[in-house]
Length: 154
Image (cartoon, rainbow, N blue to C red; front, side, top):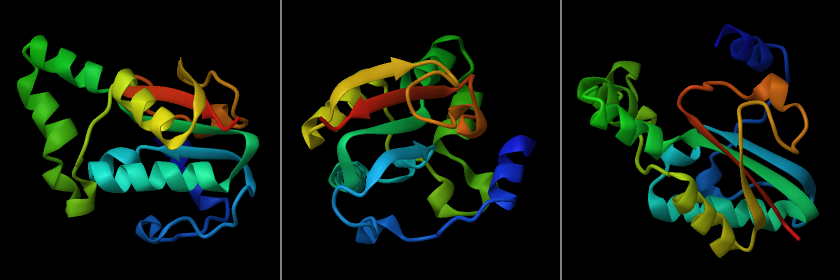
């Protein structure tokens, strides 16, 4: 996590409330990378964000979405790690923000369906720091709990 904080500290980022859309023109970006954001939006707002990502990507562009893996979370429950599952993935009170709370969860099939509904094709599950989007070795984090998915705008 410390490496991720360094990336955030030593690079320029634009902060924007994505509930108002993505402030970029149509067909502008080659790549979009989203890590551990989508699960903090309710289902409807998540759908809106994915449509916005599709809108701003150029034809041939790629999106990489990383979310907590619902399959992993259910596995914790099935192994009897109920308290960890609830505290780490659903009731994240200790961070002090209602935004920190997860509002929707995804497994591969749910995320694939969401991306395809927005128009994406070639929806593929990848491993930690593996895929077609540049700089993922710098950006990917939380390998044990995450689902890594990429999709193309054809």
